[in-house]
Image (tube, rainbow over all chains, first blue to last red):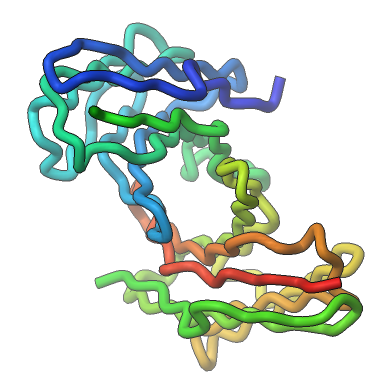
Length: 117
Length: 113
């Protein structure tokens, strides 16, 4: 299995709703990431989990709450979002670059397209 | 600081033309990785290639080729005999000593029949 699977593919939510995005990989990658991508812009890093611990938070508002229940799963809990949070949310995973593995790289999921109304 | 610059915002070509997408990067690290990703309208980021800073060999994969030059901090991507299916946004990206993948602003390629 060489994929990162994201669910749902599309999500419409109201500003008072609570929802969660899910990401799963079974490649044994030790790092998992959430990126946010607005239309016609590059992906922007939100969070990084390394060995199931949060290692990077790019000053993301607290209405976004990441969770890494185990090495294969990454969730993004959403609460009280604003319309400007509407975007494509991408999950990615990668190996440890220090293992010296030649195929080190980032694998992305197909994303969840979120619309906040 | 680390930075990736893709100066070409949009390129339009006619099928069968060759096209080169430019990428210039900045980093003070001696060990780093460079990537190209393709993003079709459906949204997923498709991995095309990875290069580490110690491997300056150019690479060819079918109609795709990459020219990595450390002297000019460039990692350019050429599509030979372009096809309509090549239409997408292409991102160059850099990862250096951190878990962060820094993306350029992307180049939108439109290939017309």
